Picture 1 (tube, rainbow, N blue to C red):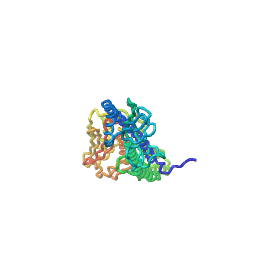
Picture 2 (picture 1 turned 135 degrees about the horizontal axis):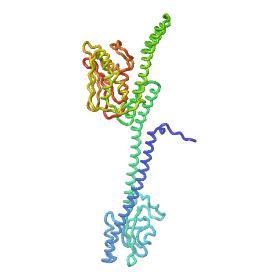
Picture 3 (picture 1 turned 45 degrees about the vertical axis):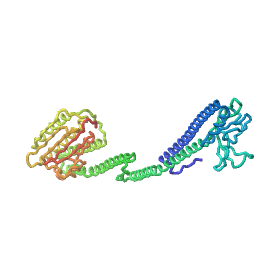
Picture 4 (picture 1 turned 180 degrees about the horizontal axis):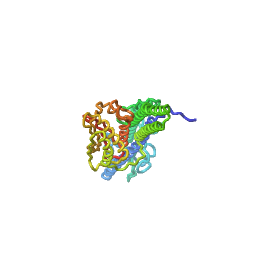
Length: 484
């Protein structure tokens, strides 16, 4: 039967918190065991060194004066505060000197270090603080009220078969180990508590932000494209993810709005030429049969159809460029050569309209791009400049200039016509099928600047419209040393 976890443990944050807490607990337990064992070894080593030094000192006293001097020295040292354990017995184990009243049986039967800690009692001690946990329970014939201790010792047989024992009480090492153990256990508890606090304040906050993102995502999927993911301003991973997704949503909303606008503009702006086509065909059929009239109607229909096809091709080109796709190749392009070719192509048109054209091209400016797209964008801008400069009161003129500016390349086309004085109108002029009122007298579908803007976006550049005082200046700004 599968065990279902609580909902809180189905979240990544809760699982990570539990995993970290388990890891901290394992590390803390290992640290407790290691530090306890290390401290025990260090204290045991220090105790053995102390006992050996004391045994050597007593051996030198025995060599100086024999047993009487040894007994006197042991009597003096056993009365000092914090004294070691001292004991001298006869070969039968009867105590002759020292500060030990009784020993665990079998301790004096071996020479050298005692294999295990043993139990002993000092002279004159009364049980006021209890019995050590490590010591065995007292026997039935043991006098009550006595305090029992654990110790380790070094046993040595003297030349006269007397037995000398020098030991050290293990109460202090045990207390030290207990302090270390309690300290490490306290540290473990604090680590666990810290983990819970971190989860409560950090993990829950992260979960709440994830829930907010999920809620906003559901609203967006429901169709509310104006909704955006929350950004707390902390600058962390959640904020960076939300900012990137918000930028993506803004782009999607922009494309969606553009699609709606294009659909509406197509329905509105293409209705007129289609209506003209139908009216011409209807008029030709209603008139008297005439070959020349039919031919003129067909030629007019073909011309109108060609203009419609050009409009649809421009719409498709703009859509592909705004989507970042082009079937054309990207190669090094000499912008100066492109400017000269386009202006040379439009010089007859400018002369026919009485518009003066000046060209100022900086040499040696090359970028990576698509020559045909750049030429198409420049042609649209130059064509517009020639059309609207003709509205100037006197001396219509168009100035084409190519130059380097800081880390950018600027291709500008300026005319001295009426221009677009309002900044909002200049922004709208780059939208598809948008034709301002002063341009309704000029032919076109309002796609020239839209196509130029799409070409510049494809080349990682931008299209700028600014007043030329008088007239309008259109700037095609390319970045240097950057592929589209």
